[in-house]
Image 1 (tube, helix red, strand yellow):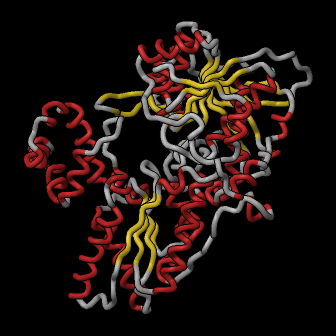
Image 2 (cartoon, rainbow, N blue to C red):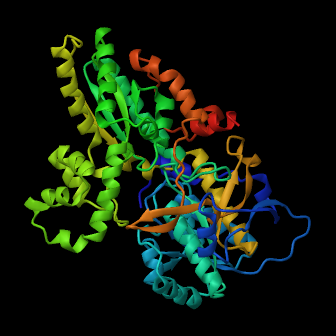
Image 3 (cartoon, rainbow, N blue to C red):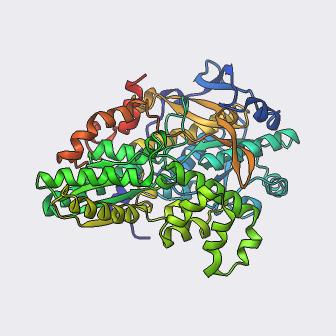
Length: 549
């Protein structure tokens, strides 16, 4: 297979491990943990894996010889840069335990585990994928592991291959499933450990001990590069407003990080919209006011960053979507029989008066996307809603009103972009290459420590990688109860942008100047080679969070 010059050079990169993981380790127990909320309910659902202590690895003074271990690995959910390095680190880690250890990859996600589709990952295969983007080494999928029949079917292949540990690399839903699987296998004494690794470019799988999910660093650097390129073009042509939607359904971490890196004229933070109880029209009016203010200075151009999940955070829309999710879950069969031309009216007739009015006011296309396009969890696929076009259209109408009132005298021409898949499979940045390799290597040490229901945790991430702190945290520690498919279920709590947090506060203190003046920053592409201040910097989000502690 032909390789580019960069592919060849990146293959030679040697990820830097935390110093503690370069020798034999011992697991030091911290205090027992509890879930972030709904403690009694979570404890009742996870009697065998609740309340476990945090673990921190320290250098061992004596070492017992390791035994061969067979490990299975699953890539679950959407791609994120660095997944291949997690698997590489896991492979090297179990080989350090014993050279006869073996690693099996289940193909195309959890579905491969249930359907017994797998391949052994050997050194030549692993070496082909070190420091590369994508999940193509074994593929990924979105099958949810939540039923006893799936667990039992998976256990058959684990026993056949003598696999005693399973590593699930995924986001909050995938790691919730890992916790459920760990609990079930512990309850039936299956003799299988389950370890999770924190993956999502959205950045919403984090807490005090999971400082960031892998892939966030690379994806935001990719997006910031192209935003910077657009801003350079914008400042050159001086005649377009660019409305740029960014991935990040449940939280605005990506939009916030890209704003900190590029300094756009407008960046909407969904969590702030919700906290201030803003309507869609409020958001539109704010953008229109900035457009008008810049026009007064002769600047009929600018950039607007929009998180893809914005619609769900507008309180009136959030209420509507919650009722829609419940309605369409309860009446799925009945709704499926309604003729397409009558579906909009059917929904209006079955919603509460307040939500029916909001739904009826939406453009036909947006209403259809809210009611017809559902994800595997039964929820609205907000990424399909073209929020960037909806907002620019509404801003255009508002500016026309302002012109009639004598409050606007400029030109408004909008262009639209959605940056999503461009960032999910990029070659990992040096930070993500190191972080992911450490997460996988650390997972091998968690397996060797004999624990289950833990997530691989590597901390102190703003320091050089040799100073990172390795260990594990119980997955149940991150859980709460949420409504899914019309019923309450245990899930990992998503980490939203904190409006009192240092990254948002830094953004909020500067955005008024960015709005009126042209303060664009052009980060350029990810640098894989060169001085550390260019190549090895973590995200500004991580930097400011640590400064705020």
